[in-house]
Length: 90
Image 1 (cartoon, rainbow, N blue to C red):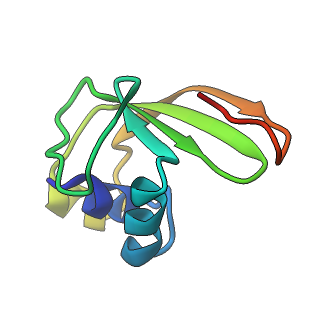
Image 2 (cartoon, rainbow, N blue to C red):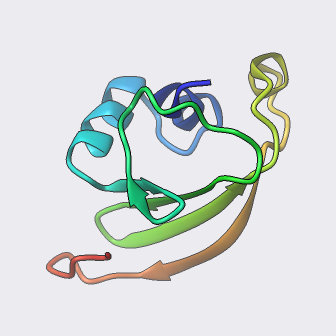
């Protein structure tokens, strides 16, 4: 499953277009590397998302689209920390 689609389906980001924009602006990383929206995520990948006020790190458990649509738990939170708006999280 594409990274942008996963972020939306897992309800980490509300809209797929916003996920694509955040990925393009280097606010999302997979396994501590910048990536493209078309990156195919797989179980075990660690995704870091830099929101304006906090950084969220999750490990992907499941990428089954049918389970995601039913609201299944597809990731585990590894950590979350507050960041200053001027701070570069990477």
